Image (cartoon, rainbow, N blue to C red; front, side, top):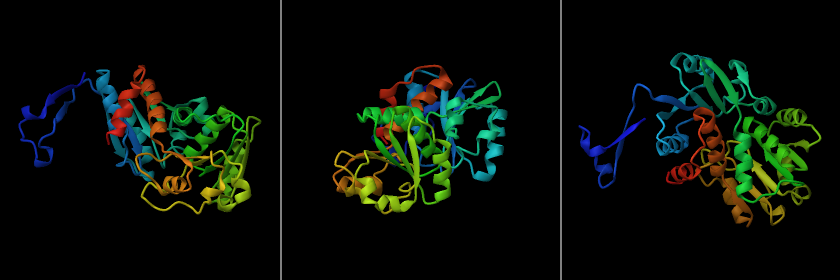
Length: 304
């Protein structure tokens, strides 16, 4: 397993910024298994802290690291995972959809979503899963949201939006409206999920200003990257929604303008932290075969 030693025993002296704190230094052994996350950008990710805390808690000889992979380097990165024997990776934007044809196999859930967010290396064969569905359902369950019979608006039409639609269908939502800047992408997503379990509609950005449409909505999900860099959200009449409406931002680790505006309208809000823990716990189990220490993962996430 990994060994931790006090920083004071290291050859270099602690820096001024580190003074007064209990520092630790990780030792990687020849048996350490590497997992991580690929994406662009990836420096903001809190997954390394969350997963490494979980590995430490269970004394597992794993280490989780971020890999910045540009779009044009995705194929090379996949070859690198095979060549280096990386045990698995999480996949974030913009790679969740284009990565599928590069893998050896994909789960039914990932195929249904049309996006992969977790890869497991099985002796050189790369298998793709989608744990975002589990993460979204976990977050909504913890927020005590009953999806059956609800009307939901999903803003965005990318990989995580597709996972949200699958989760909403599995949870029993009655009507899901996909809103996107590009009508064609919203139309294609709605068409892909046009099955009896939930009616999936599509709409342009004007729907976010449509008071008649918003007055019956129970849940609004931001499945775009708007807010990741502190940019303003799209024009949306938050106050036109019913008082019980929940505004759920899949972005985590920051108070986005989407959440701030919803709170100013006195509507309930939820950020993506609980989703991150839920999907991360599922990935942890796929890589290690062990039940994830949820309390440890939450604590690590909230300490950042």
